[in-house]
Image 1 (tube, one colour):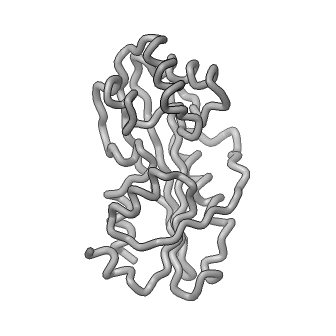
Image 2 (cartoon, rainbow, N blue to C red; image 1 turned 180 degrees about the vertical axis):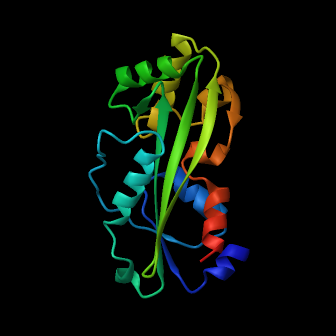
Length: 195
């Protein structure tokens, strides 16, 4: 693999508990370790749109000293948000909040922003990707069945594009599908190739 060859001297750390990010990074052909540090994911209230995940990706990176894993280590952090009607839709706390979120998304176009931070002992670089997702009108029965079956409580906006709700609900995507999953792989590949 081209990228794996280019970064062969680096120990790559994915600082994310997300199984989707793990799957997507592996799909780029990289060998890496997953190391998670708990960070309070709060952000200043004046931030909007892409500013929020960029801030949070950088915040997650501050939990790591790039040298702690050796001189040639590379840490990747990311954060994804759903943005609808000038408001952020985070991960739902419970079933009812998930129903509310999916009811708001139903029949609407929303934006998904992912901020990514790449950190080594010589650089820290952040970038973001934006995708627009249009859902058809969902029934309450569909929304409740999806939440009961897939339990999307670890997902921004209460849904996973790669799950049943994505199969039956999404009419149109503008931008990266993988960004909506949680990691803009094409952009990440391009940025990692610059190192």
